[in-house]
Length: 454
Ligand code: GDP
Ligand code: IMO
Ligand code: MG
Image 1: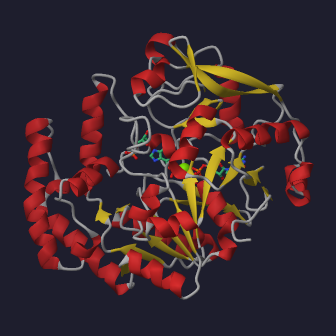
Image 2: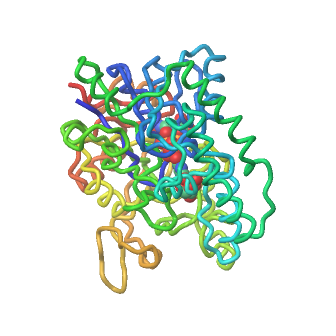
Image 3: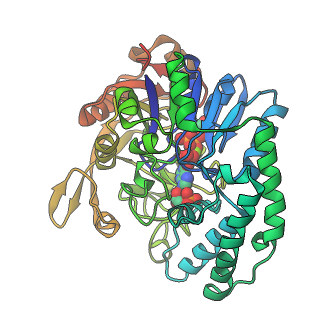
């Protein structure tokens, strides 16, 4: 049986922590999409690990697989592996030969396109890691895959085809002078060497075969999503999205395990008890606003609830794991969660960060939206309509600051009653049971209600 971890909102819901939490019962952790745009945090034993590519099971010494649906920057992968080794971990990472490779020109083009869009206020606010341009090349059948790095002749042939196109795009379409990032000979040398190291370390695999064989041998596979549902390229608020499918369907296409295997297992939706967003795009329940990211900020300013947003941002340490940018903050958006639950078929929920909201007199949720005089309970399909939605708020009594470690030890009933009312409202609205409640960043700061393995 597999357990799939899916972000239910906009990323940074605490997926890494949940992978680590349940990771003791797991042998292999596989990522199925995204790349080093992800930043997954695991806090244990006084150490904090911020993982971008290495699957979060590494902290418990589990095998990690980067599935075919991932985009892999070998430079950052090796940097991360080396840094983890220096900290005493022994990451055992396998990489799908079918996974696509991020090259330096992808990063440059990511920046160029964001810059071009900023003139007309259409900037997405990407992480700048080259994610979009790499998936573009994958879909355009001009990408370079991990398997290609292992065969120098193929690598050279692919580079010779694609690089002149990329150079022309940068120079002739966008008018930007290009450098070493677009130089075939230097790219060839650098990426051939990456291929050699991948081979030396025994990392390339056929991910689908590897995972299927592991399961046939009785080993347990956990599947770790990156990003979140509302930034899914199909089910999110396009175009303010990432370029892959963080939703559960992606777990099948991005690993080579069949939809039946994924669907027979558990799919845990990871929910932050409020909302954060890094980058642009609408956010109906937003409190305050962040310059450069919140649409209309320049005209409207930070909004009336900036103090509250600031409070939550500071309490929750809501600054981007990858880019350090301040995250936009809002109340929990329940229409967004209803949509996420339908798309991914959550069998359980992990709701994190209830400790961050402690001490507030009251806590609101966006229960529904009002749009053109009608009340709707799920998200509109177009981003423009979504931006027109006014949240219909529901108020909950707040809960006090608490000794959360003690709560985690004692169990669910030790959670303050008002927080339980909040949690149970979410679970009832979605019709999905709560498996875990996060009351702090550490492995021990979690109330485990149920294990997907029992
Ligand atoms: P991910 O991308 O979904 O893995 O999440 P991130 O690691 O980017 O962001 C989540 C942040 O919140 C990290 O700093 C975590 O250590 C922290 N965190 C996770 N769960 C909780 C929780 O329940 N309470 C608090 N206070 N912090 C949490
Ligand atoms: P984890 O896995 C939060 C956002 C970016 C931007 C949009 C597109 O840590 O939850 P991209 O670089 O992917 O093309 O950027 O998606 N984004 C994330 N936001 N958490 C993430 O990952 C994200 N990965 C990308 O901020 O708005
Ligand atoms: Mg993150």
